[in-house]
Length: 292
Image (cartoon, rainbow, N blue to C red; front, side, top):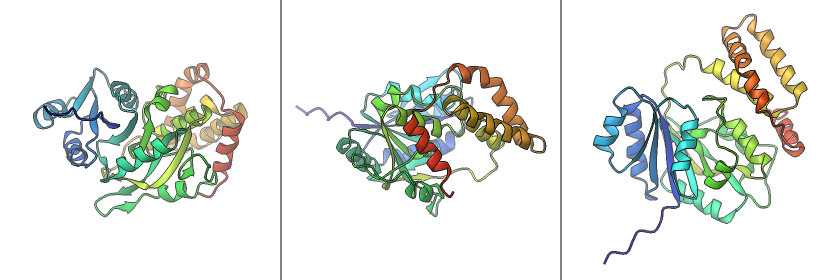
């Protein structure tokens, strides 16, 4: 009689929409990992052949077929559908290095307060270090005695591993931001609830983004930065950031779009407003004063 396989300790959630070919490359890398993580694709209502490809070529992959495009919230749906204690995120153009997820699980096991681990990210076929690696590694927040690595309040979603209970405790990625720069708000919310957010350079992710232009991304990034300010930062800070964006909007089309979209979402942001506790606000200010 064959003994049952031990339960998997780590799953991978991939949020995707209309990028079937890139998704296939990512899945081949993830399914070849020695850790054999459970892989779940949260499909944001793709209209291409993504679902047919998954059914034909990757029957071992769980698929969560969302009826509409939920943006970053697809990761929330995926994390709820899994029952592994730890969840790694990949985009449809990123994957994890062999051994990285096993190392992440070891760090979570050894540090019960660790809520999110930000990996070192290597970009493209030449595995160039992402510039964010150095920013995270040199964070002025430094180390904590009960956490691995360096404390941070930012990360790349495609290079992050979370403790599932911590992630669900804070509600995951926020519905108001949809996509683009959504990571900072999640880091704030984890820290506000007492969870550690750290960068650990010995956990490695690979990212192969499309080299083409990403239309609209600058406006979305600025919109979500300002919405994050209104959701969590002091009112004078949020007002100052709003004024700065309004000044830029006089001559910058991206800023105009960002301001317009922020104002449309501002009533919802004010209803959901929950200022950071003083110690997290001090950490956010310290990071903003650090050299980029």
